Length: 94
Image (cartoon, rainbow, N blue to C red; front, side, top):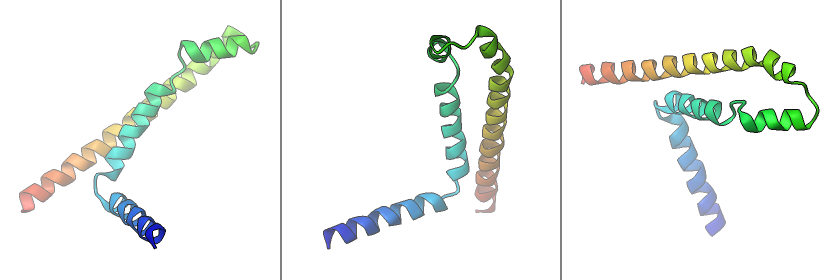
């Protein structure tokens, strides 16, 4: 019985989380954090050099890293601006 109640509580919490209007902005924020954490820095470069890749390979992949960063930043801007506009509309309608 206790396991069933725990499972129902977890499921109820997740459904509430997925239904809230702030979810797109929250996901956009997570993408920004992943963008910072997974950026190809010294650790990634050291790993690639250790496994025998040339530094020209890292230089060739840099534009892809930049493009990924720009796409994520644009997604964050879009979702956060949509969220703030929706909140402003609700405030003015109330």
